[in-house]
Image 1: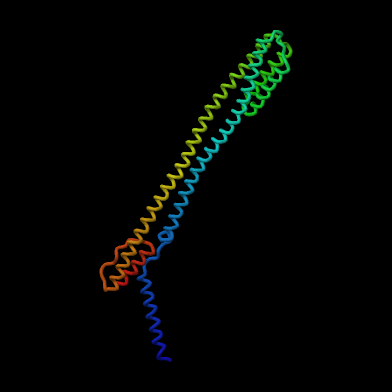
Image 2: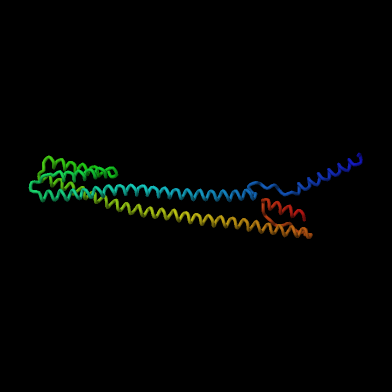
Length: 263
């Protein structure tokens, strides 16, 4: 028992020395930012940032598209009201013109009053989306009140001119609405084309960049692994020459240094 103790102590001392020597020969500790995992995380973060940036750009374009659609809807509604008001006002103008030129006594009939009231109602309804139409309705109503109080020829002429002026302004607003509708349609098509083009371009560039980065990374990694494999085979065959020139500061670089220390 006593004779075995010195042997065990010597064995333990030798093992400790060998472990210390191996630790001294071990390569430097790889910092996390240089590890393969960190590089993978960095690539993933870049992809996420690119996707988010592309999404933000698309969102801006979609907001423009939504704004154009909302305005186009408002223009359509306003045009519908103005078109209806223009139709009934034109009919009222024709009836007033026929009555003022054809009637000998210039009497205001209930039928004509109903036509004028319909025109006033249509103008008031159009005023909800186009405020000037409310003023036109008041002008026609004022002329109608004057005509009801005094159905003289001057009152008929005043009514006819009021309707003619309102109809001209209605036509001008309809022409403006048509031009604005055409502009909004063009803007819609242009913005929609931008969105489609952005998706295609961003997707193509992103896939190309990611493909090149991944291909370059794995090409270099495969080349270094193959060189390391060849060097390990050479060392097994008795190679004791210069160390492998592999300038990597990650796990593979440490592995290459460890293989070289085996020579």
